[in-house]
Image (cartoon, rainbow, N blue to C red; front, side, top):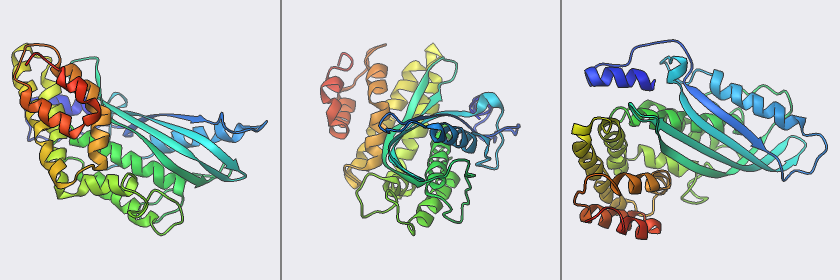
Length: 302
């Protein structure tokens, strides 16, 4: 849907994207089973194919996408335990958004879910229902599919991800009745429950606005030399606005994920080009992402 958003949003921010044929995701899927000692690992090949088809062939929204508009993302399943039909390990998810009139893809989500547990028999059909928890594997995959689609929409329109986060929240609610981890608020503050809690909480409104302003009004405008200064100032303001989120919900999962994805990009963006006042931005970034404090301090020339 990216190219549709680009062409139409540049004509009128009030117009909705047009409809074309196709699914939403272009997910690359890889299963790593190097920790498993077994002579026959065909099940992992079968499972990898099934997951790829589940993510890419399913319709996740009421919208339709041309092949070149599909959202590129990556799912890497690292299986560390396997016993008959029981699998466990971790899942790495990444999603990057193309920047208008550039060959650059901006990272939006880079994360690792260490609560990958599911049951699967080779050649089992991967079934999913939004209203029922049929399988922990498909619930996890669908949760991240809706999360990625929601984040993608958030970067193109203000709060555009709402309907997709609502679906992801339904999956969280349904999955809490099961025995698998990753879905409960009581386990820790960095799991699927808290990711969706953060994305749907009013306390994170500035984060949602930042996703839109930083990408759509910032990065997407950087191709035009006459707009670069304005675009960087919008990006700067959107990042500074995250201080309010931090004060309301310190050490939040969503803030951590944001800077895991964006930290180096922010340093690269503000570390070069025409000099601009950065003291206020540096102060906020150091507070919000202290692990990169020394890099932020060296950023720019002010």
